[in-house]
Length: 299
Image 1 (cartoon, rainbow, N blue to C red):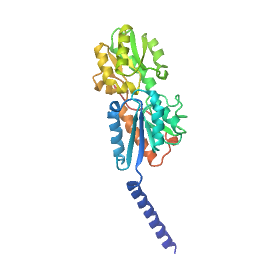
Image 2 (image 1 turned 120 degrees about the vertical axis):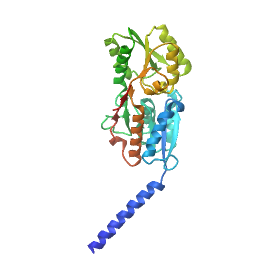
Image 3 (image 1 turned 30 degrees about the horizontal axis):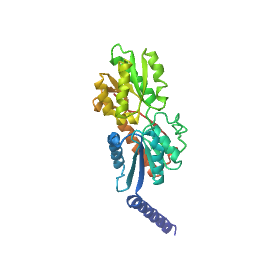
Image 4 (image 1 turned 90 degrees about the vertical axis):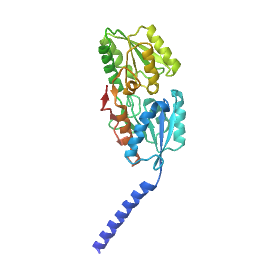
């Protein structure tokens, strides 16, 4: 009798596993919301990396996953509306590209899981309780942008002889968190840091470089910003036009003809974000997934 019960139990378990696997293949199509404060064209390359990594993990667009994309087109004030729109669509998960859209998403929902592709300081921004135990509906990657800004300044001084003034492009109304280490580093390096607030559009960028020339800077750098990343081709062109050597936070600027860069490997961060999306769609909770710090850097 016991033998019959054991056989029956094993058969039931095998049936359940078979049914579960079949349900995963033919069941629900998960809807992913993607929120970014820059542009679709500027994010095309990294988005392709993200989708390819999801595909390797078995998530095929149109088969078991779909995307809803929302881009603020350099207008951060649109983010709350776009985040609310994605929540109304009842997406299963939100992917956000930095702290700014992450904050908008977190204000829009406390239940839908949110995965950050990168964030400058998720704890300081109030997105997570701690890196090890996020504690809410947000997790993802931290890009260590604050620390790397100082390294970029050091590289710039070594590369440009007799450098005395550096123009720093920062998005208008942006956070000062990236500058907390950069300002004292400039003093230690005996450099004058000329901070220039910029509206990241063609007119605003042109005006910023004109200001830099008036301030007689000898080189340029930018804060880490999705709007700057989206406008990287124009920024590189303006650096050439005004004959200003520049260092950038991502290699994609160099791909557009920029002089040099030093920063986290963005493609690696997007691959890691895809891994977290996979885990959450399979049942993991964001609160239990530590925020990962960048481990790959590239010149």
